[in-house]
Each structure stands twice: as structure tokens, then as C-alpha cells.
Amino acid sequence: MLCALLPSLLLLCIGMTSSVTVIPECQKRLEIMQHAMQTQGIVGVMITRPANHEYFTGIHSEFWVSPTRSYFLIIPATGQLVAIVPSIASYFYKASPCVAQVHETLGMDLDEADLVSIAAELKHPAGSTGSKFGAELGSEFAMQIPLRDFLRINDMIASAGHAFVDVSANLKPIFAVKSEEELGSHARACACQSRALEKIPELVHIGQTEREWCRRVRAEVLLSGCDEAPYIACISGSGGYDNIIGSPTDRVLRPGDVLTVDVGS
Image (cartoon, rainbow, N blue to C red; front, side, top):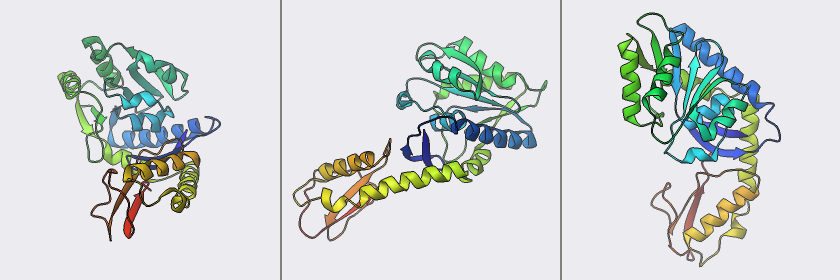
């Protein structure tokens, strides 16, 4: 699956018939990231945000909507990726050519052995002291793991004389520069949404609530070829509207109303 992306924001996804073109894309992203790491003396980066897992591995999972599991992807300065992930998701990581090693975790809470494994994978290529490890610490990023687990891993790293640094400045330029394949994904997603938006005069009628016509617009976006439409804001008002980011309400459309539909791109 390829997705239309803005930095740190998944907009619209459109499926692919083959994953063959995904792997070269992920490998190129990894090489660019590793070059930046080597330039800055960063020996390992810990990735926990699902969107960033997908970006570097090509793996997409509906299970990521659950906040009850932690996923760790270790990017070494050289070589392939290492994943420390729940056993329920390990199949996908083992099947990915981008991932060299997979360690399985059990249950919702990480035990001491899991945390030791994560710290060990980070420290494996490090020097004796003073090595830098990256994490998603900057603006537009967030770590999708319990804070207590990050603090425990940080303590393990610090005890060996190492430290975490923010790598958001490394990630943002990679996300911002699109490959030909990513540009094609953008174009296909935008074409799907355009077909859906052209049908709004047929979908929206006086007497409908905002919830009703927003559901019809979302359904039309999906029927037009998108696999996901996670952001659709539908707002209306008499003579105008008072915001552009709210969720639809039970307000009934009346003659003279002005409405806006934002599908996120």
C-alpha cells in the first residue's frame, strides 16, 4: 500500500496490486537516513510511531489504531532494521525484506527482558562511551510508547555513558522530498478525492444533517478508490461557517446555508 503523505500526516491511501515497488522505496529511505546518522555520529535510532514504521518497512496494519501495544524499530547506522514488536504483528516484520531481525514481545506491558533487548540493540554498534542514539523527540513527532518505558530505556542507555538525541530534523527532510513513486501516489489519491468531490451536488440535499451528508461524502471518497479517508471535516452555517476543523453535528441543512468539505490535501 502506498499513501499520499505530508510530513507526519497520513492523508489518503490508495492500494497497490504488488509490494514489489514498496521495498526499493523503503530501502532508499533507509539509506538516506543512515547517511545522515553517520554524518552526525548517531549509531542507532529508535522508532516507535506507527506511521514511521510504515515509512521504513512498507508494513501497514489496522492493529496500529490500538494504543495498548508498543512497537520498536531500531535503525542502525549500517545494515538492515531490527524490530521489537508484539507477537501478533511479528509475521509482517519477519516477511519484510527491510527487517533483518525480529524480537517478539508478549502482553501489553513490556517486561525487563524486553527493555534490555531494546537497549542492547541500540548499544550493539556503539563505542565504549559517549555514543548518541536517536529518538522521535521533536515537533510534529511523538513516541507511541509509555513514558515510563522510555525513561527506563533512557536510564539503561545513560548507565553505559550514552545519550538520546532528537532526530526529527533528520526525518523531516526525508519525508518532505518525494520520490516519483510517492508523487504518483499523491496524484492517484487526489484524483480519487476529486471524483468524489465532483459528486457533492448529488450527495448533499436540504433537510440532511451534517452527519448524514458527511457520511455520504466519506463513503464516496472510499468508493472512488481510496483505501482510507481518515480526515474529512464537514461544516455548514447560515450565510457562512464558524470553523473549518470541527466534526459534523446534527445541524440540519437549510436554504441559504454555506457548507465546506475538507478532505485533508
